[in-house]
Length: 185
Image (cartoon, one colour):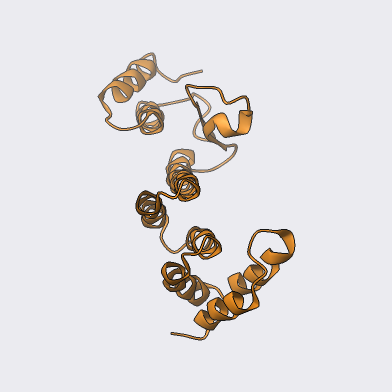
């Protein structure tokens, strides 16, 4: 279904010549295919699936990237956007893992990478702040809470719901201290 026989060669060259992670190389191959003429039916969809090299036995944990664009006027640009977001969430998840191992410095580096990749997304600020506060790193969490509440005060509402579902300590003093950040500019 490729428009020209040269599409496959262009994909292979782009894949081989691109530096970075597998997802970056696959994205380069998709982009090269489109530039070379792509699918004879035109631009419409794109997909990338990258799984871990080691099976954990939990399929959803093993999917590093599982992205699909079904119907879009510019699927490669949309795929690039989704890959960037997925990278950010991967860094956030890695930060959570490191924090549970009490590797604070490394966790904060991962959280900061996530926030850089998808800046302005309150969720990527909120969950690290929650994790830090819940594990006794309250002072470090306060600037993050202040930032997320300034972006969207609804996150303060969610925070208040977390103790009831076991995702945050049932500590009224701690809660009050954090919610005070919503009032600071």
